[in-house]
Amino acid sequence: VNVNAYSSSSTAGIANPRLPSYAGFGCSSVWARPDFDGSVAQALLDTAYAGGIRMLDTGPSYGLGTGETRLGHWLQHHGGHDIVISTKAGTNLGDANSIYRSFRPEDLEKSLTGSLKRLGRERVDILYLHGPQPDDLNDEVLRHFEREKQRGRISWSGVNSFDPVMLSRCADFPVDVVMLQYNIVDRSAEKIIPALKKAGKLVLSATALGQAIYQKSTFGLSKYGLWYLLRALKNDPSFPIKGYRLHKEAARRGKTGIALALEFVSSNKEIDGIFFGTSRQEHMAENLLLLKGLQGHP
Ligand SMILES: NC(=O)c1ccc[n+]([C@@H]2O[C@H](COP(=O)([O-])OP(=O)(O)OC[C@H]3O[C@@H](n4cnc5c(N)ncnc54)[C@H](OP(=O)(O)O)[C@@H]3O)[C@@H](O)[C@H]2O)c1
Image (cartoon, rainbow, N blue to C red; front, side, top):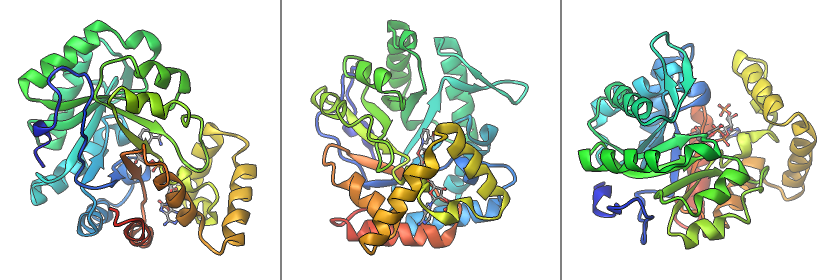
């Protein structure tokens, strides 16, 4: 897709966002771990694409570059020119294969150069600042986005944050896209979304499934089950209570928690697109089926 056609020239938001699909796949988490089977990772992208997914999101910090390298490998074989591809900067991959946080323009530039190399591309559609702090939203960063747009290395500028304080600042910060967290488990961004839309931003919801904390299979007896459990505990130690309530609610309505989560997020018409992750083909297939049932999505 030629998103350049809709890209604003002055990082001032997008008047009429048109995305090639409503749902996107997140090339992160378990999928991006070096110890996750690379052929399964490629096959998951095949299934996602066959099911109509046309947005893929990644970042240099996912699997210490493995997320981008895997996505780049898949793109080599599939072209992917009808897909919106996004990556991030600010959580940058250092020389010693470690992540360092910096939003200084020279580090952002270096980070994007590394991302493009791993992705095997000359351009990404969206570049997000990954988890910036208030001071990081400054003129230097805006000039950096402008330079990268002029060089043709990015089409849209963005901020990815789950922090309501940061998100409310984004309404006045002239970037094109905001990726936030808005799902059945965490509605803290709900009141901020109208201001972001009013400011002309494209608003995308990451973690659209609420990280499936209401689903027993998430924390099953495997090394990834333990990884998901530790992540859920780190994000919110009270997650078992929320998860249990949602599980009960889904059972009462005769649905799965995943179906409920997708219905919830898609009922907010100010959300332009959503992202989910999975490491299992059966889950990918289920999600694609559920998405098809939602007003013609994806
Ligand atoms: N997490 C963050 O902090 C973050 C930050 C910035 C951006 N994002 C973006 O948001 C994307 C999605 O985030 P996420 O993967 O953390 O959260 P998510 O999509 O809300 O949830 C992923 C969880 O749902 C499970 N799942 C998926 N489909 C399922 C199904 N049909 N039935 C049962 N369980 C299912 C997955 O387990 P299985 O693997 O077992 O399927 C995994 O535990 C990322 O990939 C990234 O692009 C995330």
